Amino acid sequence: MPDLLTHAATAYLLKRVLSPRRHLVPFLLGSALPDLVSYLPLAITSATPVLARELAQGTQVTSTALPLWIEHVPEFFYPFHGILPFLLLCGLLAFLVPAADRRGVFLNLLLGGLLHLGMDLLQVNHHQHSYLLFPFSWRAYSLGWIGTESSLSVAPFLCAACAAFLVHDHRKRKALGIPGEPANGVSGGTS
Picture (cartoon, rainbow, N blue to C red):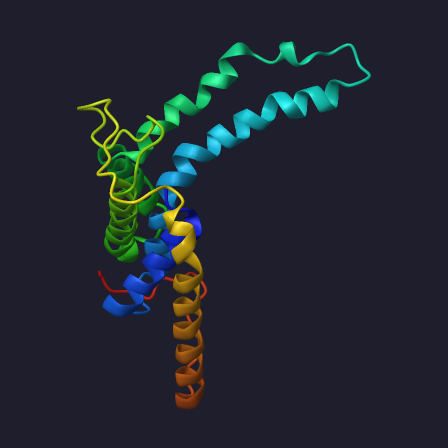
């Protein structure tokens, strides 16, 4: 998978070119959300037995005291790396914002996530946890056009481009006397 930095940088550049300053935060969050929701539980539950062993040293508690089901928790979250479950997640998250911003936040979360899934679709898939068409298919899909580490060679250039846009925008706003972004990153509108 392209790493989160590559997903976020690509999303920022695309959003900056298409509609700067309109729902940037939801678009960036959407571009990272499929990995955060589907793989963060894996990282947490993988670390849990190690943490339990560390805490149990010198006590009568062993790491086998952990429930056996804990290693299967991530399997529940893998489908969120697919289109339909992600669509539902975007809908739920959109209800956390005021009604006036809900449509724009939903669309930008969704579009950011679709960008993410599209980028992941281009790569060689080495794991079987990206259920793109769940619940209609449990098959992992991949076009296999780029390797999984290929994004790391592009990341510095994407980050440099992002930094250049940020500096340019900051200087432009400063020269025009325009204040910065609103605190929540939602500036109205629907795009």
